[in-house]
Image 1 (cartoon, rainbow, N blue to C red):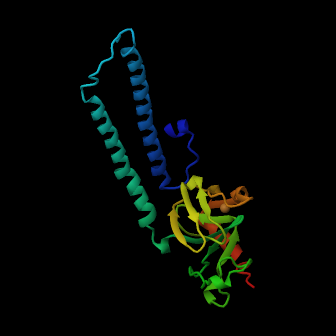
Image 2: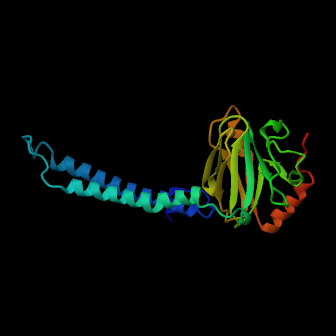
Image 3: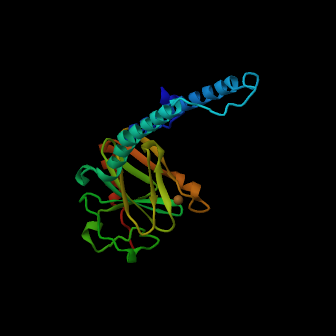
Length: 251
Ligand SMILES: [Cu+2]
């Protein structure tokens, strides 16, 4: 119900529930603070009005109510941080799923598109070397490595099977971009020279927009044509199979 009230976007990933929960808890806290402050404001207007207090009081407040309230607010914030935010972050950056149980995909952002590469049937990415990077080979894939042969490269349409963790290695060819999929509740900067792993588990079949969350140039907005296509394992296998023949057209 609170999700609707806050207008949270469609959720289609497993850990995203905790992200939304945290947003909702923080909003509850803010609602309580807002009502509390507003109430106190009107109380102060009335209680300390001039007609009732013709002479200034030089002693001021003598009880400790405000200290207790402050401590209570800090306590709630501490609980949210320690029991919700930190475990969520730990899961995101330190508890990666087994590679063999996940869909691995390399993402290289560029002005202004998303390149993605899969390891293909052998589940092994072919060798890469930055000296091999060209306009047609943004991943620097080595065409002489047998493991490269079945690797699949695509642009903007990134397919993954549903209910299986996705490990994405995020990088960039030119400037700093940021790989953001709102429905998955993930955002990761794409930085040239770095390959940053991130993971999420899609739980709903569908097509989800990929956004670039760093202003990366004059056609930054057109990077929103990137799509994460979440489909059943059968559909995914069929799609991946159809891509292999067209794959790794390297010069
Ligand atoms: Cu971008």
